[in-house]
Length: 87
Picture 1 (cartoon, helix red, strand yellow):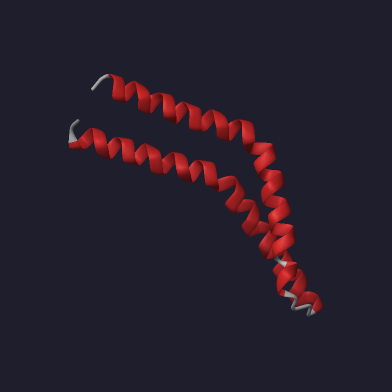
Picture 2 (cartoon, rainbow, N blue to C red):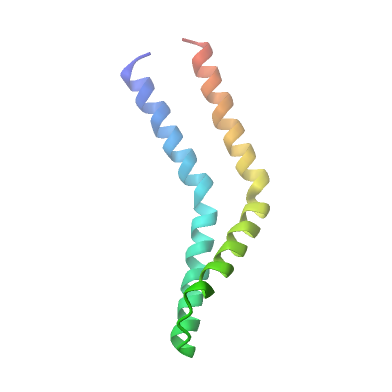
């Protein structure tokens, strides 16, 4: 295995991780921003109020994007096995 090949595999791994995590992180950030705006407008400073909507939103996003995430991870894994087979 050449150093270029190892760097390419690491790059693809990081790219796959970022693509897999992005939908949940973006939705969590948007929900957190909306809850923060709501808290600032109503002056409710309950710490637990931020967690429940985020958890529900991330779970729903995971259910919605689940098939795509599985396809993405399978594609990366099969590509990794193909690279390992050629070594």
